[in-house]
Structure formats: C-alpha cells, structure tokens
Image (cartoon, rainbow, N blue to C red; front, side, top):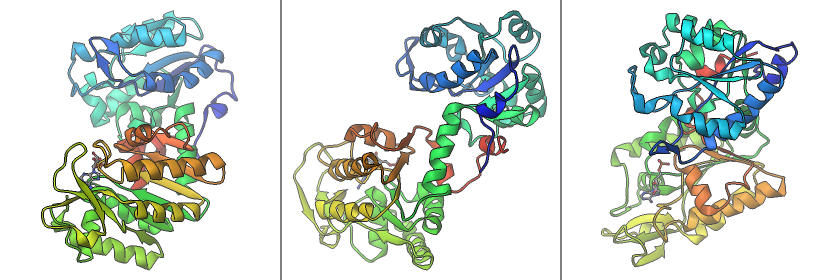
Length: 399
Ligand code: AMP
C-alpha cells in the first residue's frame, strides 16, 4: 500500500505549522517512573524531524484504559520528565485534548516546540471515533502524522477520525514498520516461510487461514501444534489441545494443500509428566506421547527440519514460541530456531520479521532481538495485519 511519509510533508515549508502527531506513549510505569522507555524512544526520530523543520509538534496518545473518564493516575502529565530528558528539550503539557486552553497553549509556544496533550482516552468520544471530537481535535492542527502502528488497528479519533480531516502522513516508526511488513508479507521475495507458535489455535484461526493462502511454507509449533497433531489422529496425552478445533485444523491443512503451502509440524517432541522448571523429560515422536505426559517443546529433529526449510526461504515471518519457552528446558526449540533465523538475517540473504504477543520476549530470551531484520512490538496491530485485515489507522494514510 502506498502511503504518505514525512518526506512528502517536508516538500512544503512547515515552519510554525501545527502538526498533530499520534504516538504510542502507553509505557509501563511504576511509582510514577517510566520503567521501559522503548515507546518514547520510538517516537524521537519523528519528533526530531518535525522540530528540525520548524513545526510545532503536538503529541496525542492514549495511556491505559480509563474508559472515557478522567483518571488522574493515567494522566500523560507524568511522562513529561522522561520525555523532556530524552528530547533534551522542554515539553509543554496541556491537561486537555481540545478547546480554548489547548489552542492558547499551542499558539503560545515557539516553532520547534513540543506540546503534549492529555490522554485521548479520558474522552468518551475517542474510542467511539466520534466525529465531533475528531473535529475539535483536528482544529488544533494543520497536519496530522501517525507514528503509532501499535494503535493502527483501532478506528479511534486519534488514529483515524482526525486523519480524515487533515493532510495525513506516516511518521518514521510507522513507515519503518509498514515497509518491513510489506517486505514480509505484502510483497515478499519468495519462498516465504511463516513460523507460527503459541498456546492456542483458537486465537490464531484468522491468522492461519490468511497465511496458508500467502506463504509457501507454514511451520506450526507450540501448544497449537498439538491440536494439529491430534487432528491427524495422534494421541497427544495430557498436552494442551483444543479438541473442539480438530475439524478446523483439518480445514486449515486442506486449504494449505490446495494453495500449495507446505505445512511443517514437529517430528519429535519433548514431553513431561509435569509442567515445572527442569522436571524429568523425554524426547520422543509425537505418537509416542503417553496418557500422563504433555508435549511442552519441539525436539532437536524438528528444529533441524525447520532449519532446513528456513535455509530454502528468502523471507521468514514469525509469530509465537515453539514451546513453553518461559520454563526451562522447554525453551530449546524456540531459542535454537531463533538463533538460526538470526544467522540467516545477518547474512543479508533472508528477511526475518517477527512480532506479536510473546514473540518479542521469546526473541529477547534467545538473545537475537537485535539481529533480526525487524521486530514489531505492536502486538494486536501486528496480529491483525498478519490476519490480512485492513488497519484503519494505516488506511487513513493512503496516498
Ligand atoms: P501466544 O500468546 O498464543 O503466542 O502463546 C504463547 C504461550 O504459549 C507462551 O506462554 C508459551 O509458554 C505457551 N506455549 C507454547 N508451547 C506450549 C506447549 N507445548 N504447551 C503449553 N503452552 C505452550
């Protein structure tokens, strides 16, 4: 999809122009202190570029789930110290989202200044995408920039409503994310391998159904692989398995077959009688799982087989761990496969994009987060994009 970028915005003189920028400042905090500033950092390139071009940068974000009410502990005002430090500049906080007070504050700052408006979700209209609220907020800006891919699956005032009322552009982080997603699934170099793991098939039906029509191979791991194994008539003992989804799993395999997508399932598994740290385990074939055992990871042969498919691929897209990776030793398959993917990404011959849910922590756990082509921290938006859904916040930026 073609979308407008900051470079398009900068074709005109934006000195002293008011640019509304949707960021995702929904950062984790403890005792009033930001404990992980990744999301603040992610917005810095866009803010800096706009400042350098003389714009007044007006930041919009949600924080927490105040559900349309003012909840003082969720005020964005508490982010001002961390944000000013990162920017090495003053940040003017305005305790409202629209109206005369906000307008006066914006009018009163110099070019290149940064203004932070109050939590968008303090207003009922935000999540309802209320056109009146959108009008009020849009009245504060000349242009709109969305730099929050992680919120782009929501059609809210700050992600979609305002975008429709002003000339709109993707910020640097948003553009980087969209460019990588396009390389991974939109317009990929083939063959494409998707690796999908995680606990349950039920949360990933749409995603699997979309992927089988788009990728050349789909490797299924984690708890959800058990449902696929069971769908092939294998008794998976006490393993996590969604018995009500066996037909669905068979449908997905049939759809893959029809589309020419190869399904890769574990050929060996690590089983245990208890789900605990370092319990007695054994590695065996899936059909050898005993009634009192559960499959908690893929085995070394499965990793080898997956690595062979990886080596034949030009693009790899990954969501979800291949085992119960938070509990040793059931992180083996995830860690080894992640290392192999990282090696391919580093070689420069393969694009590896990972994201969604627990995938970021799994890649961090494997120590490869910096070695992949791209890691999306967007969660829900990343998954909806993998499901092939149109994201309203992205659609609104269409060129
Ligand atoms: P998801 O949020 O759907 O990506 O699922 C991630 C969770 O799946 C992680 O917490 C893993 O521990 C869990 N998981 C992966 N494989 C298994 C398995 N074989 N049995 C139970 N849980 C698993």
